[in-house]
Length: 73
Image 1 (cartoon, rainbow, N blue to C red):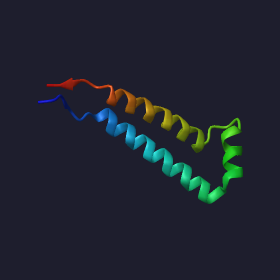
Image 2 (cartoon, rainbow, N blue to C red; image 1 turned 90 degrees about the vertical axis):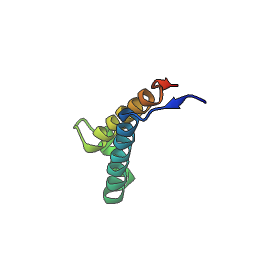
Image 3 (cartoon, rainbow, N blue to C red; image 1 turned 135 degrees about the horizontal axis):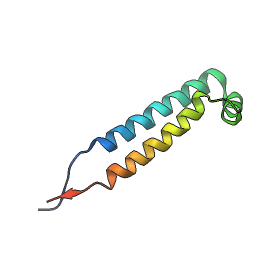
């Protein structure tokens, strides 16, 4: 038979981080609009948009880590 890929929690947590970040982006886009979102991203203050960008980075890292996982026979 071929190789078997076990499920790991890195991929699941990566997807969770990406989904939560997308929800925050869509919520703020619906409430504030694109102009204010750009202002929030470029301001000096720590905002939820900047935290969402960090969450996308962490989620992407976890996805890569999970997909690079070991294969078992």
